[in-house]
Length: 407
Image (cartoon, rainbow, N blue to C red; front, side, top):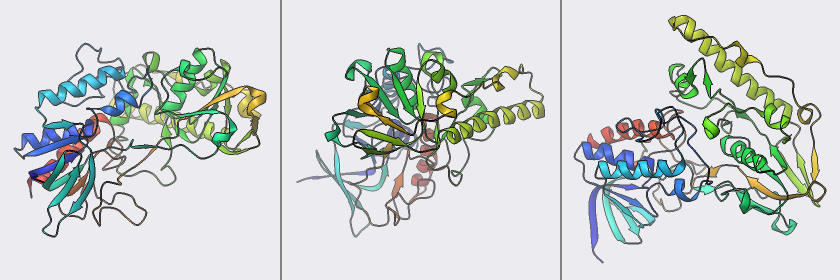
């Protein structure tokens, strides 16, 4: 069997792989991008039908190309995002091969990497693992299949019509969980929302988008996650023109909030006694952003209109002050559970000693591993908070390309 050779092999043809290709191409470094499905496949087939970006179009993009035909302050729908990446790949003439799956990556004694793929063997001096953070849906083993409840991960949820008739429990109150729960409620479903720890920034404040505030306040550049916040998600939504997540408002419309889902026994789900604390900490995060924004405006004498009404949170709903600790699924008519519980990494194909730490996590510093020539890109907190986002991954790719070009 013939062996193909290239200088740099990029595994993954999503936002990370395309950004990496641009920076390597600009430096004249020969490379290939392998994508096992299609460009931006996660946006195509692991998102629900009505999904839009959670950040406005002026921000959620690469620096060198704006969204054509999308208002800069609007939130691009998922199909438009797919087209954006397709257009970008064509614009930079990225050497992407779709439908090619990397089944194993090893390192030869001479330091060359050998990739076994569905289309043959490719060897490279350098490899960038750019498969991103959303690889393997996490579906907690709480409710057994024998319970007779329809269960789906958010990656497999498409629309309310997909679910059987009846009430729905949505587990997870980050961006995905809240948006899915809201969509189901708007479709007339009775909805229970299991709320865990979360950050809750304002979608806009004093005339500026939350992504702008996170930028000027230095939060996108935070180098490491704060202790105890490793699993805290951001509750924000670009749906319906963009809005601040309001758990009180959801409850006022009839949604029932419960704590973290922890156990199931004989048809009954049990929840942690943490709902009030999770809501309180989310509120505290929300108000802290307003405090920092106000201080920034004052310190820099910026003429932005005050917005005191943003601080009015309103009374807590009864489901928070008198929380439900257990639910009989049959009695409540709950026929479906949507698990918006995130994703795990899956690097089963990457079989290079030294690429992972003792816990099996990618071992790197800003994407640079201790294995010469091996890099990671697109992971959460790769170099800072912005790393897994569209514009953040572009800057991380630039850094890695500079390292690769330097030998």
